[in-house]
Length: 363
Ligand code: NAD
Image 1: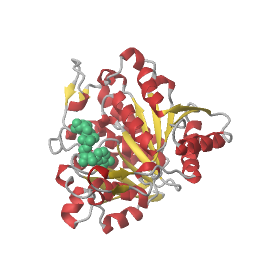
Image 2 (image 1 turned 90 degrees about the horizontal axis):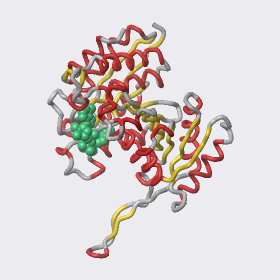
Image 3 (image 1 turned 120 degrees about the vertical axis):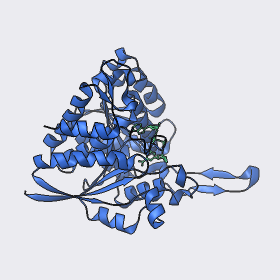
Image 4 (image 1 turned 180 degrees about the horizontal axis):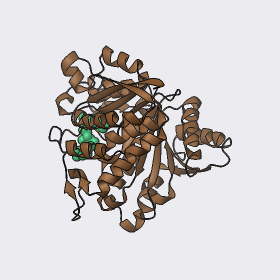
């Protein structure tokens, strides 16, 4: 063993602990292929941490994350905590706070298909067969979700609410560099999303991205307005490889990409700061409607571990082993409830079974 690598594991609420349990099984199996000793430290986050410590992101959790090499995050939130003010809720009080604390400005969400799950998609098969393998790169710590001032003022019919969309040159440049560097390792193609026909922030966004692109002459850059790309994604998704978006547009586009694949339960995501410190999590939420029933799909959470191995441990080989094991399990017809396509070869399995089957397929 040459190194020690510490992972802060934050299962959170709803289906979080159920799918995280499967991921830890996989991590324990894959560890024997790694040249690194993995230390796993588990911490409370979200609603469960509010109930236990009165804080969605307790100091112990934050310190634990600070002393780790990466964070493996489940999901947070649920109706039990919806009555709290926004800042005290699990989503803003824990996840958004973590993103801000570690300056995780770059969100990377790969969306792709497993061929035999094509029929889950709301899109026609003849369109999908042309290919769908997109990475959505979303700016995560700027824009309208964080811009100040925001709030509500006035009373009665004169009451109004306001948010501020704001982007600095630095914020746009650093996300652009991440996108261009990832593009170099793929099809060398980026579509940047904005609304430069209306918004000042979008005019600056486009200007900065064009400037950075001059350092990457082999990467083909195009621009699309947000209203056009939502249509193009339905019409011809195969035209896209990397989609680069400001925060708000990325929130929308990444969920649209997820839905094209048919199940949010299959999609991982990673968020990075300048030093490539990463938080890895499923694309979906805590799914309170199915929590505790042992029916959630653990694949997104397991794939977030695969991303951790690829990006933080720089171990593409082990990362690919996990992806191969998932593909093999799906090829054998095993499905959690959300993945059923009504084909005769399918066998419905629980969250626990799916985790075990994937673990056993790692060779
Ligand atoms: P959600 O993603 O939790 O659920 C949307 C739908 O997708 C539900 O029908 C759910 O059952 C299904 N789904 C999600 N993940 C699944 C999985 N792994 N397997 C099978 N089905 C799955 O979104 P929501 O209902 O809008 O939000 C529920 C709660 O989660 C809210 O409190 C929300 O704020 C929170 N949330 C948290 C995060 C996060 O922690 N990163 C992200 C989004 C939403």
